[in-house]
Image (cartoon, rainbow, N blue to C red; front, side):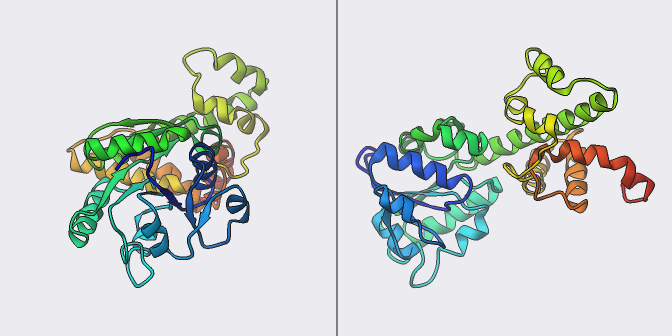
Length: 302
């Protein structure tokens, strides 16, 4: 299969998948799509609509999956209209944030059912909706070197794809990424509350600190949200519960006794229990600010 001539398809046209589809379509001139709802704008821009997952797989050589997790993909595999019903030589790129071992197990089952015709590369991404729109995502690849080379070429309009190891390595990398992101956003939220209650100018503070060791891409992207308190959804906080669970699985599998990870899991569990899970991860500021009130009510874990 040549990546330059391969027909590319995508399923999962949500917050991340849709801007990635736009970039793939602009770069390649064609893209096969399937979704639960019609996508007239993409079709008007040149995309080809596939009425069923079966049609999508039969038309595509490379299929990018941007669904929330593996169960949503597995629902689409079987049946007369499923992805595997009429698939030929197909490379599936799993962009979902998932369990590394579950990706390996799924790939083994798919390979066995299709006599190796359908292969898998994992390719979770980091950079959020802004990165997907700008084509600056960090794309973490795991899989066979030849398949990963095809994946890297296909996904290059969306960001920087890097092969990190065998199948599942991308998911391990994404778990590491989420460990860092969750720790950072909680620190930013907590520091913002401390500074605000001490009477500091928050905009001036974060502008100053962004030039030092406290600076980060996350601070750059969430600075205004932290300053204003606007935590309208972009990167939903609730997803961190799942992602940190995958990190905990990796810690167990590698015999690692993490110090920070359990505290992060507890914090994001508490965010969800407080009814803030559907907000942006910058809700860390509101979460920290409300803990004293909830502590007085006895609803903060001790």
